[in-house]
Length: 322
Ligand SMILES: [Zn+2]
Image (cartoon, rainbow, N blue to C red):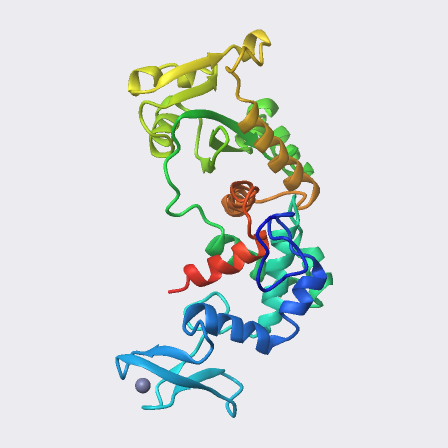
């Protein structure tokens, strides 16, 4: 028998890494249920007893009902108040907590991303609000901060991201007499990624694809003595001397797989990422690209988790609160 989620006995926790809309609505029917969830998760597992920093002891807390503006619980002994939203991404937001939870639900349950435009429609909020929520979730909860270095069999690769340049830019290039091909590539961003086979993935926007830049990233992402699979791009040529067992696949000779020598896992991820960015977000400015990379990496790294991605994301909101 697979383990059953205690809060959700209807569905085996391992059945799928998703949470249905009905389950969401049942667990978080209103703002108060979201607030109570935060309160229990962060301070009082039983909903009543929490550590009071002023008494420096465990005390009974009661919900403070009159001041709804900044909902809180207060210590029955000394009156000290705890605000469950303090230090989280929800603090000081005028958007209701349930809408935040719903936005996180939507972001976590799609495989290939959801646009701010779609969020605007689903939540009935202004586009700017939807966009701000997205950005907060992406850049505060889904970052790769504290990611463990990869080890064992690791594939590394880099890719160019970005569509065709806009008509106005093409005209500028023509007017200035620049080489269209070079200008086109200059406009593209480069993402470097590494994935441990059967394990986690890390990816980052990098300024260029010179050997030195790639070297630094490889050493940051991958443990020494790992087996590193790359293509035959010359920037990787020295990597074998840097403490890695280097296996190269000769892409320039149109060879893509030789036994276990390939970079198909990381390329698969790049393909998914680029399709998503193209289909859902249309075009992404370089300024925000790392946020999108983080979102895709975050989902990829949790693809096999027992808990639903939504509950994982809620967990991030708690564990990353200050
Ligand atoms: Zn107290």
